[in-house]
Image 1 (cartoon, rainbow, N blue to C red):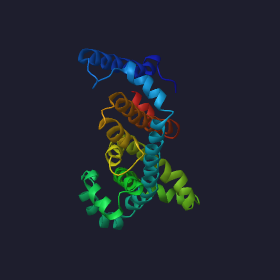
Image 2 (spheres, rainbow, N blue to C red; image 1 turned 90 degrees about the vertical axis):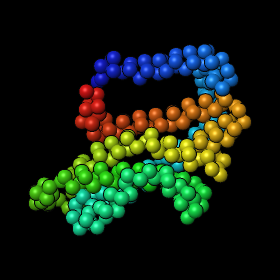
Image 3 (cartoon, helix red, strand yellow; image 1 turned 135 degrees about the horizontal axis):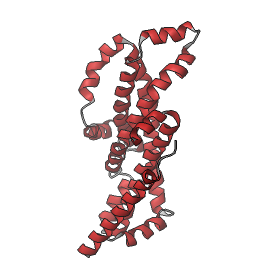
Image 4 (tube, one colour; image 1 turned 120 degrees about the horizontal axis):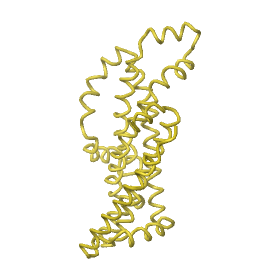
Length: 254
């Protein structure tokens, strides 16, 4: 499906408006605390091949690993809960209790139990994504009627065939939607988690290496890198949606 030219130009138009507003604000303030894009963007492009790039790779590795852990654990469990009334009745009260709680409040508990390490940061992000994916996959799996599954089994389908032709097509759109909605929250939590006792990561770079020592142009370059990370993750998920769940992509364009 080809999008209209006007639709393709919308992101670039929005970016141009944002840069113009940024430059206007910097010119009006005329203070070092708000350098303009003409100062920050060249610095960003230069530092991205230096230390800033290493911080970017460290943050990318953490959030990507957290996404993989969340998908590999929440998706199978969601399928079980959606297809097993007994399992759903057993675990539903726990999920109902924990799902609305902002998972960032568990950060001190995770640090106490696991220590302040890369694993604890990854675990926190995966915990946030876990509940988002678990709930939507459970609901999608519950919508699969027993008659549909029985009809597929009557054709000789085993577990692999059921997963490939029934469960995966039914739950993949839900997983991708949950990831797309949650990716901004995941990056925000990553920023908070990386501020404590670490030497690599965009959160550390923005707060410790730049903000605390008043390196404002570098600080804004780090913010741009954090925004780039979120945009790349979002865009990658959209590419997967367009390939494997095109009805979601078309619906969003309407």
